[in-house]
Image (cartoon, rainbow, N blue to C red; front, side, top):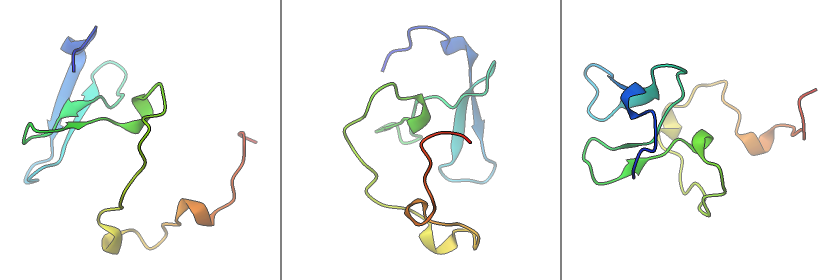
Length: 84
């Protein structure tokens, strides 16, 4: 991965006490940005920054047993094609 512009604006926040959790974001607009994992073997790419279909789909849902009691699985709720 190679940054084309704005790399100096990237900020990393490490959650104190967490083994793996960190958030990388643009310090100007707050947008989450792609980054290498702490282990350095993989990249984490927030889906909201993709311009095209990545040709892959989610394979699992982690921490399912500790989800909030109010969580509703997306396929169980109504869908709308636009904001109303």
